[in-house]
Image (cartoon, rainbow, N blue to C red; front, top):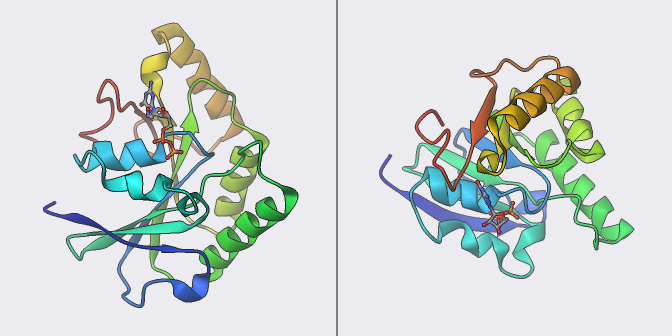
Length: 184
Ligand code: GDP
């Protein structure tokens, strides 16, 4: 991997890049650590910061990796202060994105290890399964938990999301400790 570059932020699926490349999609509730994840995996300090500037948090953010694939950062959900209208806009944008003709390889769904999966986490996972998109669940911020707590969360996720196989489509990640970087 040589280069990752920010391409554009998209608020409407009509604005998706004309260029077609395989897409690796990141999804999760706001504050789960998606921006930090991109910066960590690609070894760039401030690359994904652009996506957290005002107005950009409700857009789909495209990054181009070596002209080989896109990393697609979906807008975070579940932010308490968001109005019903904004939530509806988020839902439409996501649904339209998945209904559009993109070459989606997989979705990395980030889940915060400190909280039980939210209703929206579960709905998203079920939605992606229904439309047959392969999902990898990334349990994030694992540096925050002790070994025994991690084991409990792992069991909980296995019971909620029965298709998960740890080490395959279920991985741990921490920006702080570097967990999962090599594998991912
Ligand atoms: P986003 O809203 O999903 O893009 O989340 P950010 O990347 O902005 O991260 C939200 C907060 O979580 C920030 O304060 C980060 O420093 C923190 N954070 C992100 N990743 C980790 C991690 O692996 N471990 C810990 N302890 N904190 C993290």
